[in-house]
Image (cartoon, rainbow, N blue to C red; front, top):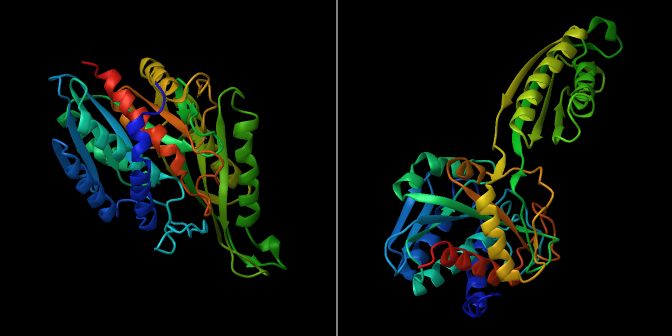
Length: 387
């Protein structure tokens, strides 16, 4: 079953919604205009229930099938943009300097709205579909906030599915894998404290800059010499700040970075060794180190049966050979993981064609992908909830 005729007919209208959202990006939980736009559309489609303010600014719509009571499955899209100055040059470029939909959440929201309209018109299923629009995916754990507000239990949602666009993956193509599909992402901040001195008298100092340099090198040994190379781990020191003058050794230096893993045991080990290495390296240089280690999004884990089911639906939409079922895991993180911790489900990638990479100022969602995404959601609903 290829792209639905109705989905193709809807493309221009849905692209208009997408471009409106693109012009008016909002970040983290401050997505009030976006959430209001979504809620208004869901009400206009005739959704049976439209709830707002879930997880602060999330929206959930419930669409009941015309074939009676049954299971409830949830489809999720993210609504928030990024704090980026857009350079795409498109006519619908962001009207808010410093904010941009550079990850395609405008497209995710538009595709799910299109599917909601279709499903509300036809209702050719038994049970209900919950369309879930969440804030603050980009670092704010909006999915966790919505889960903690209890919407999964309130609406008896039994399975959850998510989708993300993938630049470089051809239009009409999908990619998915069972198990760990995206990484857990933790952050750390290290403050190295020594004793400052004039640069001409380094022997009078306990140099935190030198100590910080040794810490950066030591941390890489966790990956290269202490972790099984078949168990993915990335340790990145992304910032170093210390000192204000070229001829003064400072008292302190601050380092910051991330740790990304695909397995719980690797995550635990990396945190333990990072703290041990930082403290030992600082001690070896006569300095001290304070470590703030924060666990972020957990691993995005695709459940086996739901992944097989999602794969079959994607293959119907894209045609033979359209689904890569053994994609390499992404070491980026995704907070849909919190929903997958509570319910079985699967997270799939949809081709965005030849576009700029995600989080690039020149990025823009490819509207040609809209009918494929709408068709995927509709087929998923009608097949999972077949009368």
